[in-house]
Length: 325
Image 1: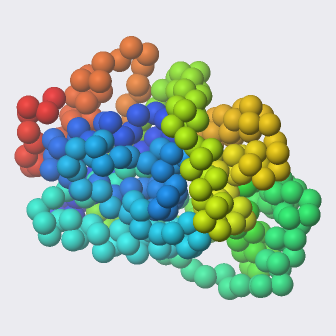
Image 2: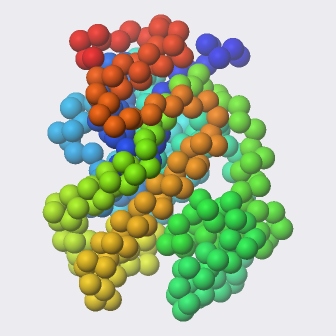
Image 3: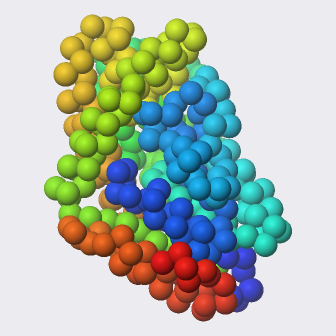
């Protein structure tokens, strides 16, 4: 099947706080898209402020998928995301719309773009329990250091707080002798889609300033109360969802009496590190057309650049509405 015969899939990636949301809405209106959230945290209901979840007003009538579909105590995996996208993409095409994945969770998005095959390595419950005990007793950083020693590429991708996925990466190595990162690298990157992937980037200092401003806004918007509400509803701090950026740090303030100023500074530091890992992941992805959001760059100029990339990739056979730019 030639590229032009494959179903079209538009993708927008970039680090946290780079400005994906506002651009995605204008592009979605321009090219008649339905958006699929490519974020591993925005699936959870009640976790709005800490995930910078788009509001109904911000959607401006553009349909969004995979937002608010799970409770915080439900598991969510890359394989589940891939399966949902396999159902959503043809359904969106069937409605005469263009599927548009927008997000920052690199592995999840890449697994859909290139139809990764997830081969189970098996399971060792005793090993998992032993690693969890290490994380509980000695701290997640100790467990993460173990992963760094055997699979540095996976360790670079995974945050120490993401204990479940760190344990899984260790378990794969324990059971097979192969690293999880090597298994991912062995995937044949042939896409079932006619892809157009746009990546957003900007000067590191400028991005870090945006991250800090976003976190300050989250605090003003009630992040502490949002997390207190989750704890009051019985959602345990050990849940994968509650280990997400913004949640773990504030839980330490609410439960462990860590001063709020210390928790916020830790959140800013961890988010900067997360953005750096995101950029590193995307830099290794194939087929990305990059847009550098320079200081003072007009939004209309950025929108024009994205529009031209999409029109070029899809050979302008998509109708777009010129009044939106």
